Length: 233
Figure 1: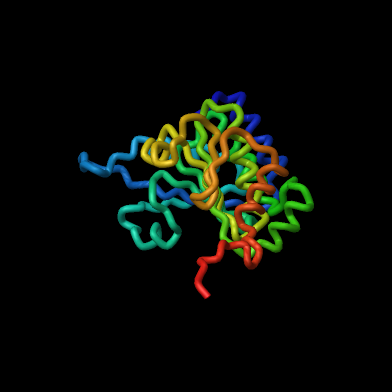
Figure 2: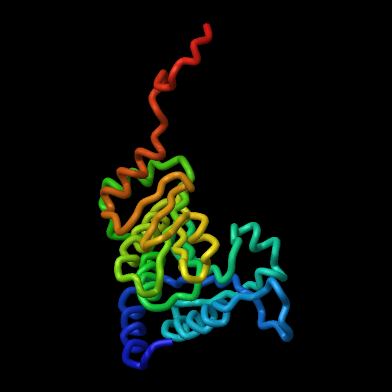
């Protein structure tokens, strides 16, 4: 996965920053004895290997594996539609996921997300935290990234931080190179690209205040009487 020097740094980071235990839940597939068309998942072995190495660096990390094909009902219940999908389960209130095998900058963002989920608190602004506490509508944030994108971790962590703070938030970071069909569907021509509730699209890295302003505008209903009259009495 990484060099011994980087591994030692990661071990020290986890030792310094993990407060409580965090479970990493991997929805993937078991190794197949024969080739089965339609069951290809080239990133599944890599995802499992990375997570196994990661949990070996700290006693506060656990790994739980689920075969998405033999545990279809569980995958459906958890909203898992593609593999590999990694869930981060700690003291976070909302859902935190990574679709793909973490590598490069995505692995760095994942480590920060694990630390945030471990403590159950983040460094977001108090105004943002207050707004999240009042949030009553579901918020789905999907951040497209790539392992080589140096700006993607900022958006990935911000989305995951919102999920740490609010049970209304589902934050997914998607490796655009692993899921080209999703990248094509959402017209991802550059990363980071953030899709919110399948309604709002944001290009590039966005500051917390700007993102929250966009979210407020999206979720705030228009005032009564704002809609145009149909002309009927």
